[in-house]
Length: 447
Image 1 (cartoon, rainbow, N blue to C red):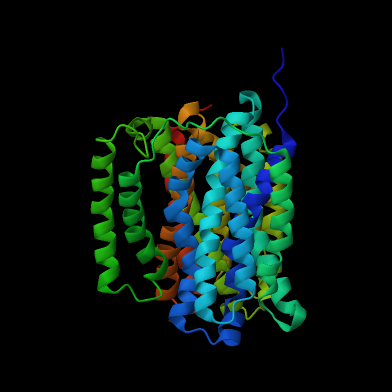
Image 2 (image 1 turned 60 degrees about the vertical axis):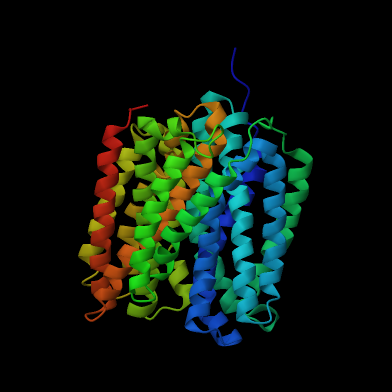
């Protein structure tokens, strides 16, 4: 007897929420100069505008994952989508920079409520044989939303709709979010909540403090010049994580079950997630900077340069199931692309000179990223699906922030030469991260 087909209508609704959440991580980067000019934002306000969304997103993921386990994933997803849509409207109507920073933080909380419910619902409602395909499509959506964020941002900023170059990047979320909310309320299935499990308020408080101490210096430390407080915050964050581990061993219903972290496949998968997203996020950052600072491209022209990457990513993500050991092949292909980019950066004259490297990197990421989520969650028991999804999504955010901080520091430290020379050195760091991902992939089971 063949298993039931995957519920694609349900997945399409869930993936729309993911697309919006990830897109908003990247779209603001393109519009930041226009926001600074229009609202007179200070450097600190602009910095927290970019970092506040990511901070709220990373810190709240595990807590919202547990709320989904307790009260049901559909109501938490609906609440997150509603908060995201309303806060997008608040961002678009912001009268000053302070209002925009606050609304952006709330928007990140809405995204944090949505994302772990999506991962958990795939794990619960999609039959096992179809689950890798569903995760592959989700991975493709996540990868393409990052490129789309930069491309759409460039288009909207250039179009200057309604006399504003930046407000439309937030208004576009409102109708899409409300339509998706109505469809989700009508068609999403209800998964059985684990109402008997009490919320671990002590663990939630300690984890929130620990993640805040770790994420804040990662997302703002580089711009601030890595002052003493940033290093103290990182050290205290490590200590707070140790306190969190001790607290979780002493409560009857822990926020993160210790047995989950002891699973070898899950630990290796989390290492892979950290390395992979550190490379992806930092690559988008340094390439965008090099295209605009080094080659003098406009935001729209710089965004269009990503089209070869997007085409290769989409093509290989759809063909990945036919490639043996696709993640390992993908990491190796992406590594070759970074090596080509390092070689070409000394002689590049136009943005389209990046095409050979972007095709390799896009193809490699298309083979690596889509099955990555299934690799991490495949060995997780059904009862831990929500918590594991929250931990995984938190790892994505922390890995991305860490990569941006470290690789971004390499890029800026080399700007005394030229932006393209700095790009080559930064890609050397990304190549090292990719080599680490290949080493972890060799330790994972073949299936």
